[in-house]
Each structure stands twice: as structure tokens, then as C-alpha cells.
Image (cartoon, rainbow, N blue to C red; front, side, top):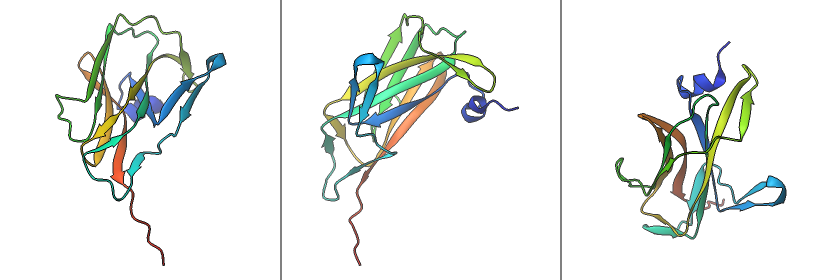
Length: 160
């Protein structure tokens, strides 16, 4: 039987995702609310010109790894449209990461996985052009793709 995580990640022991939204709110009881979640595309109004500014863009970044893996450092990078590979809009290295308390299991093989999660908020969020906001993690020499959000102008409505 093929492990779904391995088939999706090309065999890497790391994988993850990012929720892109307007705001993240933490509530009593440990709940998290994501307000204004984007479904893959952030549309700007048709009359918007570039460079543009969005008042706030929030990201919930999650990275999953085997519970037996305990990285010394995790580098998170966020690239906005027109960023160069060596110059992301945001780069932060998390070091001395505490033992992960969030653990999930893969129902297929009952492999325990640790979760590294961090919220990021850009306010204001400058957008130089259409393109993608891309989130990446680096552990050792491995780059893990954690998601992207397309930035586009809303097509003008066509009525017949």
C-alpha cells in the first residue's frame, strides 16, 4: 500500500500547508477562527493598479514531520510576486524549537507526526504585480513547498 503523504511529497518526510486569509483569531477553548479564507486566489478589483496594497494578509503555516525528527532549525520564507529566489519578502529562522505537543497520526500506517505551526500577518501587504504569494520551509538543505496564493485582478463581469 502506498503512503499517501509519501506519494504527495515525493518521498520527503516533511510536508505541510498554508491557510491564506484576512485574519486569524484565537478563541477560548483552543479554537482558531480563520476570517475571510481565500480559495486559491486573491482577486483585486478590476480598476486596481499595481503596485497595490491589501490592508492585511494572514497566513497559518503548518509543517508536518515524523515525531522522531527533531530539527534544530526551521527557516520559513514567504515570497510575494516579483521577489527573487534569494530575497523573499519574509524570512525567519526558528531555532531551539520546543518539543512538539501537537501530534497527529496517519490512519494508513499509524505513523505519529509532529506539527510545527506559526501564524504570519502582513499589514499592510504590498503587491507589486499579479503572480503568487509562495510559502516555503527549509530544513537542512531540503526546501518544502507549503502553499501558494494567486494574485489576480477580478475579471469584469460580462452580462448578456
